Length: 205
Image (cartoon, rainbow, N blue to C red; front, side):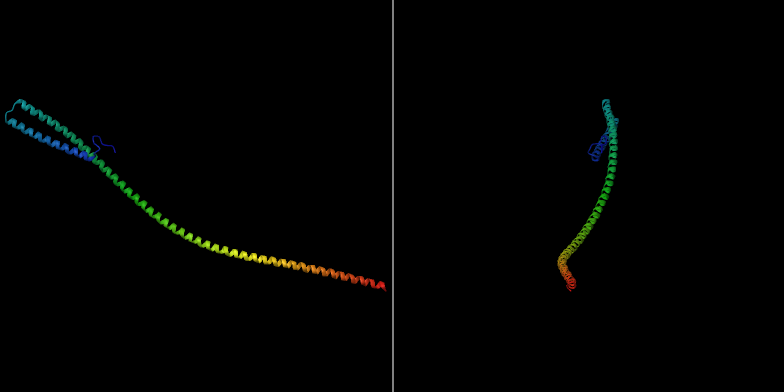
């Protein structure tokens, strides 16, 4: 804020001090004027020389001029004081408004902080629940994986047993086919021999 013309940085305190000093000066001047008037009255009553009267009259005029000048300065100082008091009042109102705005903003920030803290706690609780659920699901999946591995081992064993059985079955089948072929060949050979003998007997007669 700019300093008013004629008003020092001391603020309203300096203005009030100058105002009091000027008022003291005026009171002193008024007292001196009063004394001079009394002197003039006494001079009227008592004979004085012209030089003394003119000197007293000149001094009275000077004191009146100084008194008028002091009154003008006092009026200016009073105007400065009123201006300073007005500025102080305006600044006080602005400060009060800023204080209220700050308190309102601070209250809003605290409220948001509490809400965010509550949300944070809720999120932490929810994350812990999800993490616990995931751990349980992982345990279930691990158990299922172990069951699957065991089943795979059983299936592998069953397949191996089945392959062994199929291999034995093929061997047995091959053996049976081979025996059937051998028997069939023997049967055919025996039938051919019998037919040949039956053809040879009539020729011998």
